[in-house]
Image 1: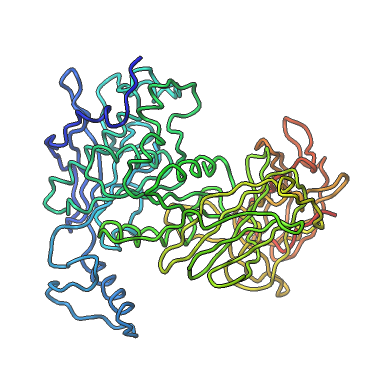
Image 2 (image 1 turned 30 degrees about the vertical axis):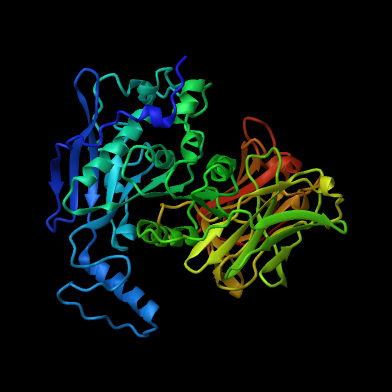
Length: 558
């Protein structure tokens, strides 16, 4: 059995391959091009033809961003612009406007993502060219896609998760070669700065950020919600893990910003924690109130990260700033670092597939020292802690620390709560309400909002409201409880209330509500039915409410 390291696997990869570009379509202004170029040469002489979409930034957006950053750095106020009719002056430390060579980001989304429908204006508005790569080929209803020779892609298109024993017949190998070919294509482009190539991967594409780090000119990466286990659910071979698992690349990878969603294990938070710990060049950013939607501060990290790393500037990232200990019968989380702001989060761990992270009250305990103390309800259940630290433009997270209170000499004693949610009565973004940010597009700025409903009463509003609070010992329903909700909507409709158990199983109840009125109703466990029988409130770890712009004023066990 031959065991290949990543370096051995890619040592013969030819970076000098000629792309043989074919432009399929080009926009009138020349900013968008749909192209094919050559990928991996195969043993029989055939080649993979990679489909990609190159989007160049509008120079006006580059000037606009340069003006904004120039004003911010110089202290100039006002909404006027800096005159630059000839586009021949450097407004920011990031880009020189007279050069035609753009910094570029290679984008790889999920395997079924149609790159012709993906909006990356957030990146192009920041002055970056973007090359969206369809690495997976015909896996959805796409007009165009990467062309693999017959038979190569058959096993993953058939839905088989078990990879073949031959490393170079694995889909992750082929997908990685598409990214490597994309980097070579950009190196040979007259429009691109070959010294400033970054990578952004989401979902399955996130794994490729690590795999493409060995044999390419890519300088840095950003990943969203992609776990370090690259191979799915099948039983894996040692050869595969050594050569293609993301952890095999972590220690040698270029700087990578790993973005995670804390609440659900399905978002690979646990895997990403392990990957971050083994990647010395990685930074970490965790969204505590999400299953898989990017938070505002995660999105806010992206452009400054590419700007700084591609310009070879030092970026401070936290590594060991968080410690957890027991003292005087209590558990404390401590951060000792110089930073602009500290947020410390805690959640009970357990068998459930999801968790609720609470934003703890932070007290300053000295110069650059911050303390937070969680309430303990079940000292036998491990607690997960992490901290978000704000450094200027960046929000980074510490590694996750796991501690069991009973092993720290701490016993339970917190007071249980029947109240799952009550509106605070203020407009704006709901902070630490226990509800998740709605899942939206990658760069959509959708958020959970507090709005005013009938009779001047407020509530949080959304089409899908999800809380994992019932998974906490503090909020767990006691036997015989009813669930009481007060809701409203502008349109008469049926809303669906869903109970989620620790395995992810769902049980549903539908209620009709009129328009423009607050309605209060109570539901028992028998109201929630599925093929698995009635719900057991004591086993519930999550509650989901779905409808059209529902306003939730309160929710509690009675």
